[in-house]
Length: 553
Image 1: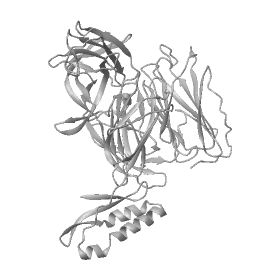
Image 2 (image 1 turned 90 degrees about the horizontal axis):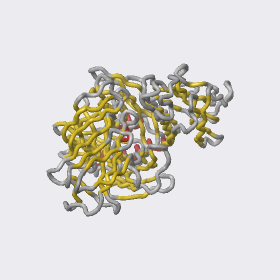
Image 3 (image 1 turned 135 degrees about the vertical axis):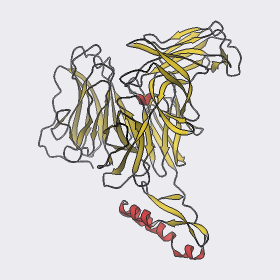
């Protein structure tokens, strides 16, 4: 058994519990101390020395048990954004362990004084949006940023519960068919007013992270993971905010639009309902593929309403690696995340006390791997698996202070959309010259995608003073739909916060969209300014090659 003592904001001293003089003692492990000293700054090393002294000879000689060190409380925070346009959602209700906060105009929320845990549920609701549950960890002494985007309600349809009927989402295959008299109040009584059916389908092919939870389930009592072929939230309410569901013994027929990054859609999948209390998916029947591409759907019956996901359980292998900071110190409790490229789903783990990790991933697949800790963000690596475990080897993922991540995703068409970044060095980063994270310009196209959906990911490890210009090129040159209708989404993450950009009107048959500029001033303050300009040729580089560069880290 091991105990952890928190020393400084990112450092953990490991104690081994051993038998000494007939007592189970918390004794400083020599190996742990050596590792800890090797990665601590001076002030934390002094604190560690004091802790080591506290583990010294007098207690061992007398046999007096040493009280286990107490881990500091941690905090979480973030901003609630609309998944449709990236704007902050004011007035959202965020609930953590029974405590509630309401977001202001900037969509921000924060909770302090939380006990360190590996898995914490953050429930978010807002008028006009489908609710969601985000899953995060709490680390003592740190503030962990929780990404949060809400899907706007797709349709709200009035239902005569006594007569039953079919409710649909216009322009979609999403629908629910209710038998007569199947809907009741929370107390089990028949409704006395029209029931409002709120329907919100999710497209995990475009963004798997918008589905509630983190794709975790259980299989014979053990943790397991699923991939999605489409999901939909169904909520029954009324004009006064009442709550309704299906009566005992009743069922309804649900159609969920089929959507996946997988090459083929299975004929039959398992229906999984989301458990808001555990943050996990629970199997609840099967669904069958119907319709004709591109208007296919999965149809099945359900006995309650929540978010329903059409899933298959992942057959996984392990991806192993390490994570460290820019000074080479290993980072414990970093959140390691895999987001499928050739499938729709995510997995995650926390790095161990030595900064190592082993994260499950679908076999015979490709995914994007990155890490985050507090407000720090790592570079992203593309991982491809066959049927065996994949050791990443050197180098580790690097969590850098002030790093900026840019993620591009889009739909089935156009087939190929390209990211371009013009840097203060005067360099042009794209698929033609991907850049470097270990030398100037310290910016890189980590992942390039040419077969729909993305992602394409650009990392800036050492921001430099000056202007970074980011634009997209519709490399396919097709416009049915173009980038606007695809739809394209660009997420910029800096200092823990994410800003979302989508192309506006004016595309026509223009191939280039200048999305935004990142301006870093002489004090290293970062300002991201939306451009939203369309052009027939690529935007000009505002920087001259060979200009003297000042880095901010």
